[in-house]
Amino acid sequence: MFRVSANTIEVKYDKKIILKDLLLHIPDKSISTIIGPNGCGKSTLLKALTKILPYSKGQILLDGQALNSYKTKELAKKMALLPQSQITPAQITVRELVAYGRYPHQGNFGILSSQDREIIDWAISKTKLNDVENATVDSLSGGQRQRVWIALALAQQTDIIYLDEPTTYLDLAHQLELMKFLKQLNEEENRTIVMVLHDLNLAARFSDYMISMNSGQIIKAGTVEEVMTTTNLKHVFQIDAVISKDPYTGKPICLSYNTSL
Image 1 (cartoon, rainbow, N blue to C red):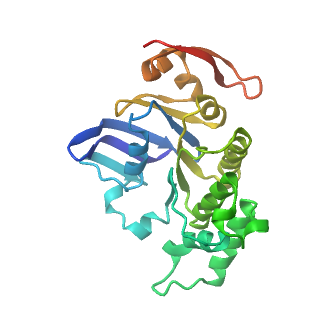
Image 2 (image 1 turned 120 degrees about the vertical axis):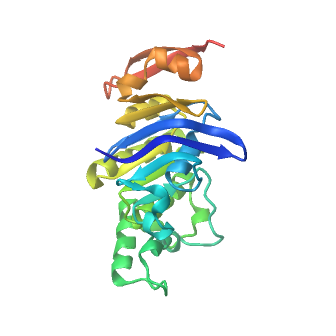
Image 3 (image 1 turned 180 degrees about the vertical axis):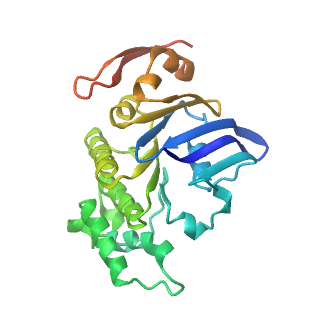
């Protein structure tokens, strides 16, 4: 089942075409990861799917309805976005930032209801932030800060969560911790996760569906086994890759590669 689809869309920055005639379908209740070289249009695609960037041609559909027809607050009840770089207000606490996730559900006066507070409590507990909920966000570690922003997204209570390079600036242990948490959200909460990742093996290990891009177009989309092939990685990254099988997950893993440039 596909709740999100892009049909021959074109996206421009000024007059430069970044995405052209792009076709895409996002499987529901799955983890989908977009991979590709720098500058290929991954983040642009994510911004188009979340209505941050307009598209000049084609159509993006969410639940069978044109994305452009949704009002901002209505859309924020269906999808949440964790951008690559988050701007945190100075001295804001974890709980105060997570509470921002309830904004789409509030009335004109912006007063938190008892239900809002219960959902905030749940989001903080789900992301294991209870011990630091009154601490300022800027005092936390990188992994904790990422969890705070995910808690904010959870507080929105959306079915779809978009993440742009969520493991950036995290060490290996925190990268693995975050990816395991996202997998848990997908499996236990039936959340649809769509993210951009640079690490091919991390993407392969935790994804159900992969989308490879180059030069503003989809090169290959499908299961991990269909995308993580020597032929496709050569086409996308211009590398000669050695592909094996992860002994823990059974999924493809890139052991090594040489550039073919």
